[in-house]
Amino acid sequence: MSSETHRPTAAVIGLGRFGLFWAETLSRQFSVVGTSRRTIASLPAGVRQVPEAEAVQADFVFLTVAISAMPEVLDRIADRVRPDATVIDTCSVKVFPVREMAARLPSSVDIVASHPMFGPDSARERRDALPMITWPVRDAHGRYRELTERMAALNMRIVEMSPDEHDREAAFSQGVTHLVGRLLREMDLKPSDIATLGYTRLLQVMEQTCNDPIELFQDLQRFNPYTRDMRRRFAEALERTEALLGDRDLDRDGPGNLDHRRSQR
Image (tube, rainbow, N blue to C red; front, side, top):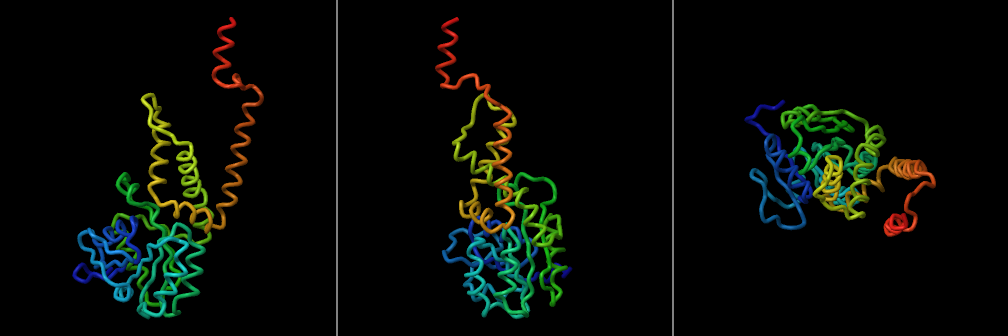
């Protein structure tokens, strides 16, 4: 890894909630600049906001934009990114962004697929090394090793996984979590004075997943080729679980009916 006297430059394209968190995290190992369509009033220490044309001249260019925005962003930077740069996506799906990066970026530009399996909320709660999925798509300039070593120095546990393998596994490990969180929010669950530990943890899942933009939930479900099967299996499991109850519902006509039967005894 490069010595601490020379920090490589890293650009973060997209300073939303995750982008700001990611820029702050990287600033401990990289000289970080960020770019966004809006002016950020309060930037993390060690991060400068610059125009996009300047940002894409960095050694490492991290894309922290929505999955659905990847084609547009790639087309916008393709002619301006440094020929020997390494472009890294941080999307929660991998097959789609890898295909788009390979098709839209110049062949001289290296590509790394990555997925930080944590965010601003979960990173604060975890005490173990943070899991970081990476895969070297193109590494002609040989920066992949330095990149992963610097991430490891940021308390990340590097797990190499192909884009297809990632999406197969993430459809359940992440996709089902976000699905359950959104379902619980639709049920409008509230804290309770008699909450069990399990119920409290369900509320935590709901809050953590619903802190993310609804766009992330939608993109997770739409752009991962394996989430449709996950949702089908989820629905089938719900039907089987309901079938365990059979026709033995004690109160078919509402809570008041039970009170009425009691009064007849």
